Length: 604
Image (cartoon, rainbow, N blue to C red; front, side, top):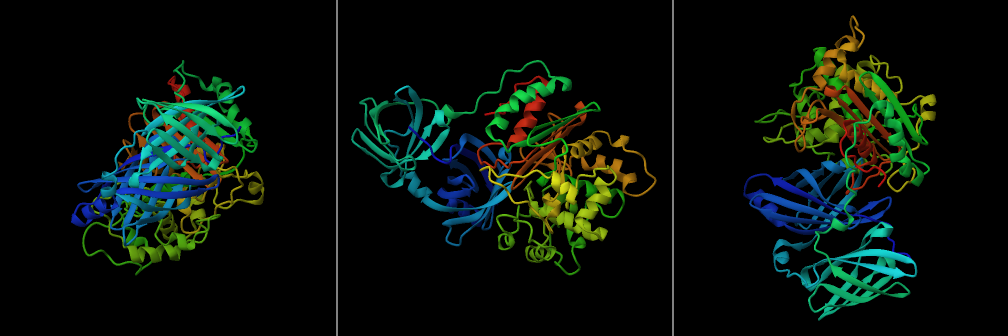
């Protein structure tokens, strides 16, 4: 007996959407209120999504239901409605959405980005006025039961909630098979009799609701009729499929004793997927350890995606220390002459705004999709495309420019710094960062010998991913590297004073630039701060940045107070709107183990 669907998780992403003041924005927010349906076409299959928006004053509050995830209540941030442009981020899974509301207000067309970008269109299903008239059905809520077929037992959970037009929406979870969010159809409650279909698994259920409304007794039929009794659950949706609690805190694990613990934690991951390749690097108090798992070796090369942004930030700090630019220098002054006019009034975007994600520029320019391919999305976006976009967009800085993660902003920063230096972005980073630090395996373009050490990347469906290439957006994600090089990089931030002294050239300014690059400059998402690209958590003293391309995930962190650096590289972008990436889980696990704190589960 199989009770499967290709997508197997449910998520609810909860966020507060802040919109601009003014009557027009107020009306826009009220017009958006309601339910919106969309579908994300991932490598693992189609992922249906439902966006719920409500409006209070000039604020939108939203939740996003994903009948293909297994997590609930993931908080969003930096949600904005500026004119027709609508966007929000989900920091816990490093995802974001950016789209445009249609003229009739019935469609939002945009991109979901979580390492790579995938088109996502929401269409309004029901307005707020319609939803206000929806009355709860007698079976709204969660119902659990167990199917018994010989010696096999399968726990199931049905989720029901009323919908406009007297309809009842439903999804089904098969907990023991990991198949969550199976869509139901034709749900009908006539008196006390319930009938429904589950088309993805070719199943039907017919039952009778008890007089007290707390039990259903009936038959599940998937070729063979089986009795199935369901009981109403008091727990909130998702409680039955919540992720396992972290293991209890134990004594701190010393660096010398860490490998056996990690081996045990990662064994299920490597066993489940033969192509998996993961490397871990740690530096504590000057002592370094690197561990390789699966198909990876300690000198394996990975794409590092958005970790590249920290190199761009350090290149900026270098050029500041060399008095070639300043943090408050206007972006307009570094664009080709005549590209864009000075704004009539108000503030302009500066280099610091770009480096701290406070420029107000979108995550990706509106014309990006015209040049992108799914296999290699950034390859065709040229410097001319970027400058043409800025000519149209302008360089005015929004009056209230909150943190808004922008790949375009960092790509543009890398491009104008390279222009200022009179060289390519690849040459700029080699001259200013990787050369002085002897990071010989960190580069935009790889030699033939290095190419042979580049591990094959895979998408979330474990299909081979195409390598990414960059033009004007190189500063946002073009670099490749190894665990050893990235440990060298992170240790440089921990001990700028230990870099060998130089009598000139970029190496002479590097210690000061490393200190400048890690100075918090502005507010980041949630309770974090942001330095030059690096995110910083004041309560823990952790600096970090992660990255993802079509087939790779990475995270680099350093903690000056503990003299500790952690690097994790993985050859799979496990893009999933409801879950953090494995690389982030591994880094969190290591930190918890070494600090003697409850340990998040890796192998789940």
